[in-house]
Length: 237
Image (tube, rainbow, N blue to C red):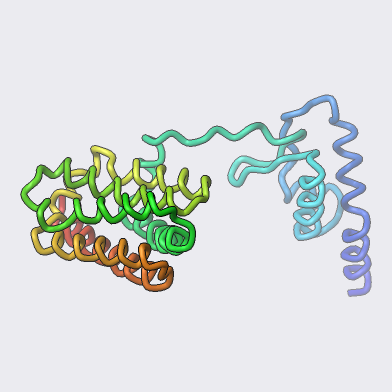
């Protein structure tokens, strides 16, 4: 037992230096894979927990980079490539998008209620009116466009450029052609009427500078969308 404790104590103080020595030996080979955690633990006579802690410390120094399922590599991490829209669409689903919208869009409403200019508020009110029950007989693509414009106008009124970019990604995913069949099936006269009322109430809350009320209505709005999409998806393609 005493010997085991000595090994653990030694690993906590020395394993980083042992790994640095290994990197020095292989310093001329950036991009080369290091041995696995198991192999490193056996090589240095320490536990895998000590190896993981040491690797984490050295990664912070920028001397190695790690990818789950791939391994540990010498040198700084290569620049990551932003996923394309088609890749995002293929990797996600309705319910993940709704989950993100449920977290993000109430915040956008809150910020819009606090920061929107008079001109932005006027535009939000006009777009909410466009999404009123008078649009029920319009083509689906027109309804989608007005709906998208309303939500994006709120994002713009938040005054946060990163939030706006995040919203744009979500909006492009939800409007992708591969999802339109489900969205069309989820669109009902009653659902459109409820959505139109909620848009008007959200716009009113923003105009009256009431961030908490607006955020609450937006959550209700997203929940209604989630229910409609869940029913459409359960009915099959």
